[in-house]
Image (tube, rainbow, N blue to C red; front, side, top):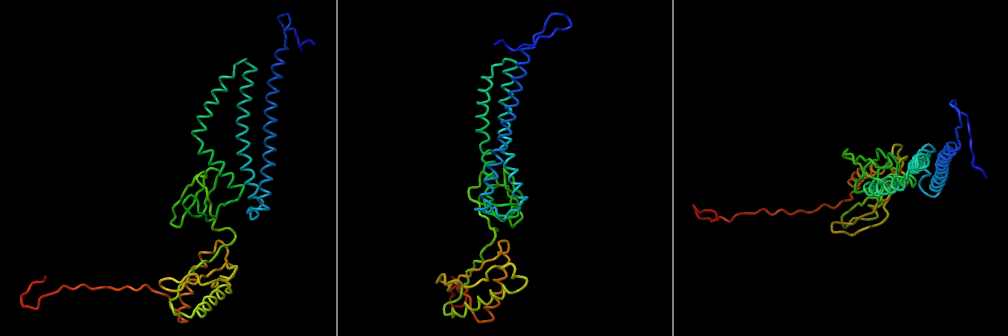
Amino acid sequence: MAPFEIKVAPPWGGQLDLGPYVGLAAAILGILVAAAIIIRLTHVFVRGTVRALLSRENLEGTAHELTGAELKKRQDTIEALVVNVVRFFVVVIAALMVLETAFRLDIGPAIAGLGIIGIAVGLGTQNLVRDYLNGALILVENQYSIGDVVRIAGVSGKVEDFTLRRTTLRDQDGAVHTVPNGLITVATNLTREWARVNEDVRVVYGTNIEHATAVVDRVGRELASEPDWGPRILEAPRVERVSQLGEYGVTLKVLGTVRASEQWAVSGELRKRLLAAFEENGVEMPQPQRIFLAGSKARDDKPGAKPR
């Protein structure tokens, strides 16, 4: 079969063979179209995969408490991360192939150089890559969100900002901690749906345990029945068991269930009311006994004697 040729008559006479140029343009166009198709397919594949992961997490995990807008934001963030990485490599490879096709350049050394540079950059930015990957997993699994109180990488506080690279916390002292996501191996969320009131209440030996238990349970019920505190409490605090016979007295384990963000307020109010109720009902709490020894210097009774 004869090669595809297009010949035109230029103004200066003769014939101009456009066949090679048309073939070159077609080859470059094919490379660009293939790159565009790969990027588009990557976008579709990533979107389907992320949507499936988030849907499964929504059904089986903790993402069910997220709104539709929050789920959409998480999906868009993860899609953008993966698609941008793939797009970068596809564009670089396509550009090298166009240079080889158009200018007959040997791209072998360029690819080898890119490989070396890629290894060097990868070694230098492996922590950064780990931060982004771990941030994406935190998003997919909904380990925590902005506004949650968490404990991560040895620090705790309220999440004020979260990106794929780092998490920003503010602790109770007002200090701001910026934690790279790559350092997060265990994330403890203290404000996920519900929390426990977990108090150890000590009474002295000889106390009527049944009476002390009744006082604690009554205080818990009264607290849960009040309009200001009732909506915060899911299960009224009550004595669960005698948890310890210690050196200073008997320890009662008091447990209750509250809304996660209210655990500290409810615990503080419960302790305040227990102090007043114990005093009113004659329930004594143990106090450490301290003995002070006053030293004295022996003096001679003789007149004019000096202290020893």
